[in-house]
Image (cartoon, rainbow, N blue to C red):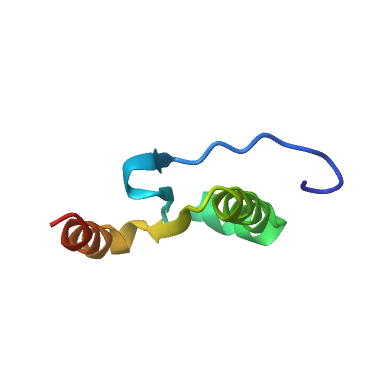
Length: 78
């Protein structure tokens, strides 16, 4: 729900075999606009609620942190 209206949220990636919902964000003008409007918080809340209800984890990754995330995911797999 954003500004009193229901919206459909689709995450960037859903990895059921790793029990993860992943949202990628770039630190740019669009991100800053969505952050200020509350859109990021609404999306994150929806993803966290879905993850909690389905025994999944939600991860939001900034573009500058993608390498670190991939290394962490690789360690979990191996």
